[in-house]
Image (tube, rainbow, N blue to C red; front, side, top):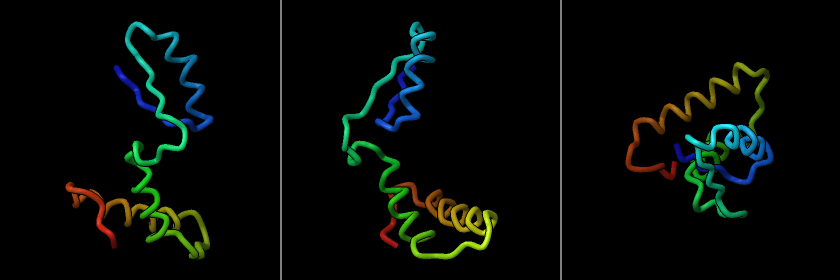
Amino acid sequence: LHLILDGAPWHTAAKKWAAEHSDRIQLHFLPAYSPELNPQEPVWELTKRRATHIRYFPDRNVLHDALKCRLTRYQAIPAGLPDS
């Protein structure tokens, strides 16, 4: 199994776990400051811009619903993210 990770601090904990399973798992870390190599970056950028930026959410459930609605829209667009 090949696991590709970015440099987030919580991913470095995976090093110890992967070392214990090195016969089956190889870790590959993306270079620092390389959002163009991390496919989730455009998803989060567009999601924040369209669903959460400068908005008030009275509770977690409302925030959850807004994010779920936005992320569900992406499932119907297999070719890539829309600009809107």
